[in-house]
Length: 280
Length: 242
View (tube, rainbow over the protein chains, first blue to last red):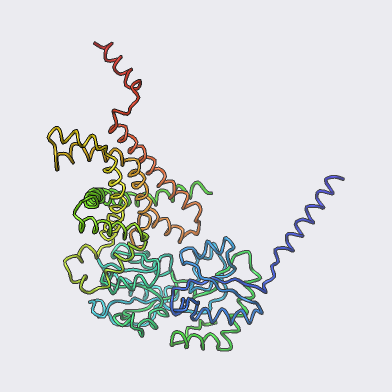
């Protein structure tokens, strides 16, 4: 009798816990980096702004939730999600297999190839601009392009932001030929390109293109082919905890709707100057 | 906590130790010389010299080391004049920028520690040395500095430990020492707790060895303060041997 009571108690406790876990998503806390213009950045007034801030606000309206967007340093952005400091990451994060081992992703809301930028005065500036190569769909061609680039970058210092797909790309393909350096923010590798400490850096074309139009980027130029797929993953999505599958569904629906009615395109053109809506 | 993962992490962190030890030893060695010179300048009766030393100490103690590293690395690199100067082959490299920042920083703290040490030298001993005919550099070398260094050692040991920990800031200018590698492993695995526990233990171990070393040096430098009984057995043994 006692054991039966105990068992019943356990069942009830589990049921209660289950009920408590089905969270109410009328309030969602979203983290962004705040240092990756024009994706997300902190403006002169100290407010978060950018493509992803506008997109997050739009998605929240679609999910009928009130959202709070907070800034979080890039290198701790996934551990803090896991620690429950916020519920979602909307910070230009590429959907990669490695990240999928620890967190969940929504559908991609953007897709931008990776590109190399160098100083206009650098000998590397002569590398001709080429089309995009996908490391999944067209592996052989992409790797041929990488081999050519590798020869050009031999013995040169080259940078990318720490814990990005771009740094992963450099370490996978260029480590034995070039001096690969990692930076805490993309702004820092830009400063080092301008100072001549490194020859160039890899970042998303969605980062370079708008920068090149600004005074800070006037000395830079994007060269060579661009890359997608492979180590770069399947586009940029919202990062979510694995346990919150209900929230992932909410995000998926909202992103699909925002892509379908042209909101993503409108925001992309406004912030990047070109469309980055991924193929749905 | 996964012991196998922590073991792998340890093996990936070990290559960061030589760089860390280089940064610490080089900046402490040059920083110590700088500290003594600045402390002497600070105590100089020549006003402009002591004012310049005081200004240097004020600036480098009053601003965060992180800001100093940023200013030296990213700040100086902004000026074309510096990029075209003879200094650029050094300042171009993150390694020398870090050494410069650490040296200037520890030089400022060290100089105040040394100033305290020098000022603690009893006046009577200086007078006695003068009576024996010592003055100037000889007085400094034989009497003042040895006593000052011995007095300053415990506080200076603190500064050495702080420098070991300060090397963790070098990763912000692309130098991959222990903390830099640790952050990279976290970026790949998202297992912050285990990686930082291993990285922290490395600092702990190095500082353990360092504190023992400072203590041994303190013991060596103060024979007059040692307990007489400690020395006794050795003398007895020596007597028996004869």
